[in-house]
Length: 237
Image (cartoon, rainbow, N blue to C red; front, side, top):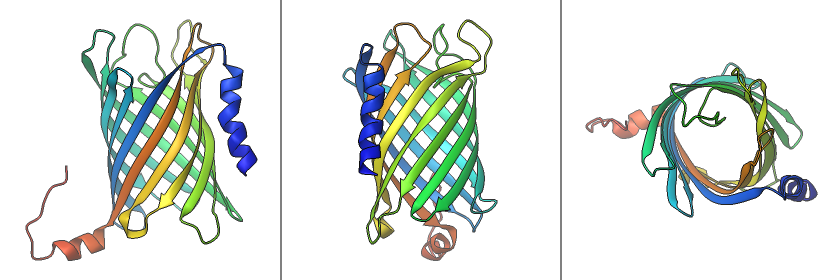
């Protein structure tokens, strides 16, 4: 498993060593509320920085439904603020429709997320797979270490352009990832990962080496009601 992690970190950089690479830091903060065994909602805030400062910020609201232990569809809404070359932030609405498939083999958890993202507008003149309409395929594998709060993970995500045009109907981005999830028990979960964002089928591509740090905390609706009993209700949104 250790050799696989090292391979996934080095491979994309060897493939595109001749291309320019910029460093970025992505930070995620999430809060989830589980209504019952099948339904849950989530609220997330993501920020992305590079050497020039804040590049992208977006809050996200999600609804997830667990059909069974193998399949879970979900819907996301994002309000994205992305920094243009002129230095101002352009707003965009985006909807994600997700199909999450999971399967466990001994200590390995296998996952595949299929996403279609629909955007209200385009950033700039050229197609950008993160902010325009796209199909995304994300296979991932996690290894459950015995008696440990650490769960190593690795995977990749493929971006496909479904739009007509010069660069349409083809893959144009591969995002590799390797990291670890840390179970903080009742205090939530912390995830630290290294991502290499690789552009393909695009001339003079600019790739990104990314440090991703995320923290999430989950609430149970039953426990939340018990704690809130006898107090004034508050709206988290």
